Amino acid sequence: MESRERTLASARTIVVKVGSAVLTTKQGLHLSVLYNLVEQLARLAAAGHRVCLVSSGAVAAGRTAIAGRGCTVEGVSGKQALAAIGQGRLMREYEHAFAAQGMVCAQVLLTRDDLRSRTRFLNARNTFMNLLDWGVVPIVNENDTVAVQELKFGDNDQLASLLLNLIEADLYINLTSADGVLAANPESVAPGEKIPFLDTIEDIEHLDIDALCGAKTSVGTGGMQSKLMAARRAAQLGVPTLILPGRRPDILDRAFAGESVGTWVCPCEHTVSRRKYWMAYQSDPQGVILVDEGAARALEEKGSSLLPGGILAVEGAFEPGAMVRVTCGGRQIGVGLSNYSSDELNRIKGLKRAEVAEALGDAHYPEVIHRDNLLLHAAV
Image (cartoon, rainbow, N blue to C red; front, side, top):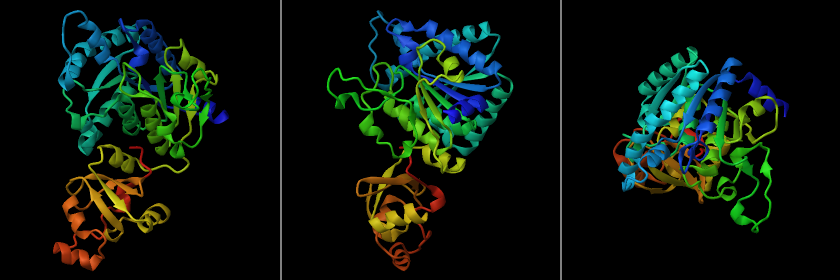
């Protein structure tokens, strides 16, 4: 497609994510894949592209390093210990590989809290911009060693989708163990039936990702579902995604040369603001607000704010300012910041403005969620 070729050629800043299933084997890091990837990234840099690499592999590398030592790995702390062992090994190989290309790389370890705080978000942005301006390749990973569960991204696909906003990237490339996105769930077809790969996904916003995707890979935490959710987020920001088979030699070179490889995910026609994108994805929803059909139509068709009168029920316990889901009849409408706590909402659901003031003693806000703090069709 002409638009695909044009976008690849003109992309100034690119986020490339590579997963554990690409970078590792049962014996450890797949060094030939890693070194070939770095050679390709060096060629992209020489062509004028700025590259940020999100790399998995630390936990898998750590697990291999202690193999045969009789160590028992259990729970979150065990995984964090593996990351501590493996991260240095991973970076050492990247440093050698980039040095061979006459380039410098930098390690950046993040937790969700680093992007949740607006001040720290801006500080991180300034650091990344300096690195990219200097021609240095940031190598980003989740800071598994110290992150608590509430501050984890979940997987590097989601981390990469947030970096798109942080560094204002033009293109997202996700290197995976598959040749692309299968046109059907392998579990839904007859054994042995050949399933074609999708060349292009034009409307990911309305794609049934849950029905399309199969199981997760054995060494990673994502799977194709996670990759498509990240691509859906990117599309909302106006950034296209290219999902490529990362173990194929020179796959990036082939894609940028115009070869139709992998799956191209088109950006949405109507994009969201960077502020609303940051707001919606900086933390996981803490509860659910169920609304009636009238409220759902007002939100989706008129761009209205959510008012107390349209609320049928509230699930979960949360404080004012929490991120919550808004649903109607089992369908997710979006996510947004609630002006009221769950206890307050249970007291005012279904009420009119005057009744809200009477129930609470003071109606602080006319809206439960202001439209400026609501992202419709969020990929969560």
